Amino acid sequence: MKRVFQHPPEPASGKHYWRGLGELNDTPEFRQWLEREFPPGSAELNGDEWSRRDFLKLMGASMALAGIGLTSCRRPELHLVPFTKNVEWTIPGKFLYYSTTMPRRTGAIPLIATTVDGRPIKLEGNPLHPASGGATDTFAVCSEGKNEQSRRL
Image (cartoon, rainbow, N blue to C red; front, side, top):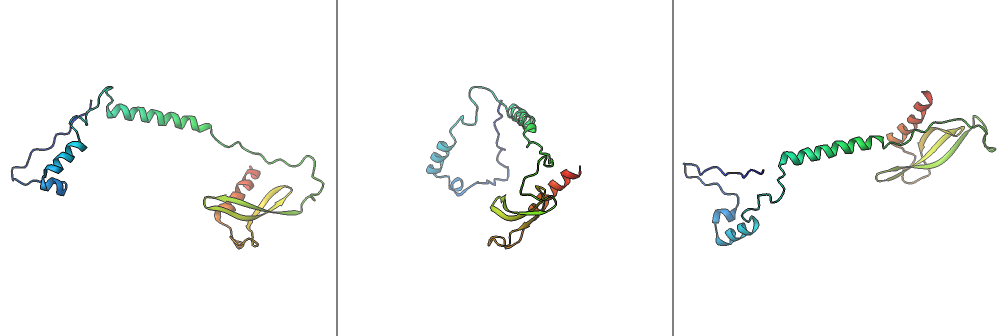
């Protein structure tokens, strides 16, 4: 059940605090606006009796269930395996360079990926692209480290 806030009684000193100029002036227009804005009985709940505590219990339970349901929403693990049959145009141990991009929130970073036997070993900024001028950021450098660490395990 909702509790109605009881305003404290007027202080004995006679001081009256107001919340705005309309309340200070106490004009009939302000009183009409006050009645329209806050009609009597608007603070009471009609129908089902939902307390604040019940509402918070329900919201807490729904958040917990949403968290449990989202624990299995992961990307599948990808394992790097060597070629069983090499592609004709590859030479084992030779570097191949690919021009690629890495998506970011504000756009994409142009990169050059250095690969050996189909595995990326280094990411550098593309010096031919005017957006980066050969620069890269820490996220691109660290993303290559993820692949490297998975091979070491």
